[in-house]
Image (tube, rainbow, N blue to C red; front, side, top):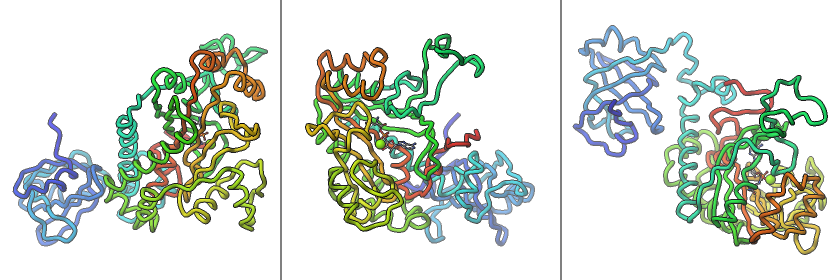
Length: 460
Ligand code: 4AD
Ligand code: MG
């Protein structure tokens, strides 16, 4: 089957006089003086293509006059210069073929704007709206930009497993994967007779496996779905989300932060360059000031605080935070947002967190109290990136693992990487949906992933 012309290509090339065949879904139909004006969208771009249909067409009365929002069509016709404002070309239809009807009595998408809450209840149709369609394109552009960026920087992509027996973050938020029936999970060793002979789960992070490949190939990244059974019903948490995790050998915390900042700037620049029409929609209808915000992120250096400085800044603020601040607490979204929105006016990188609030693999600082961690915080979201220099010293790591209660035998392979040719290395994880939220200004993380999984909700 030959592919049809996409509306995006027509608008880019605007070859008046050419005959085109386009396929898409009807947004609106308006009739006037023996003509029908159809607005068609094919998802390739935000813009609709206007199609003018004359009443001489064979199926004008029998079909065209019955078309309603949501019908799918194949249109053939000539591109002509458009007299209408806001579009350079339109199609004068030579034929209209109705591929699929959409009953106007029951089709849930009307011409009016729908709330995002309502659209969440029709996950199978919401990508046909302007806003969710735009999210889909921005998400795809950002995903491609990630691969392009790391390819250009000389990184290799490594596919880390979805099913794993390591709980990287040590927070006990792993979904268990079992082939047993619930009643069979009993006794002192409930997983001994299970598929893998031990407890396995869905990955919470590909980092530990990425470290293996960084210690053979130097620069690697993994980018895939990640799962957390954390009961956080917020606008920034999902139970299934995508995480990008680069890992770099012969790299320290400073190199890690520099790479993350360069990458975020490159991704924001890509969105500004490649998704201008979609970002203009978000600017107008979702987040005023979005384009200026993104331009500043692209152009201005990020602001650095140590955790200790950040806590001092928060204590000095005089703000009545919901979670009171003192040295040793984990920063909450309200603190993170205050730091970038009120103090820095830019993304903030907070480093050297207390060791007891961070996972076992982070490199212990010389003071013995903090670790070489870094979180990147952005306006409206809070934590976008979490990363660190990894503990490369065998003895220190072994002690940290014992302190965290990790089974030395099970994580023996991780310790081996410190026995054989260990090197300083570092990496970070970027929550991809939080990036899409940041770039689009969308308020709720459930609206930037096609099929959100949250506590109590996995409809299809
Ligand atoms: O800070 P986190 O937990 O870091 C790690 O998993 C490290 N292993 C990463 C690494 O160093 N390779 O998660 C990284 C990022 C967070 O900063 C946040 O953006 C996102 O993942 N994230 C979530 N996004 C959506 N829903 C959730 N439940 C998330 N939990 C973390
Ligand atoms: Mg984190």
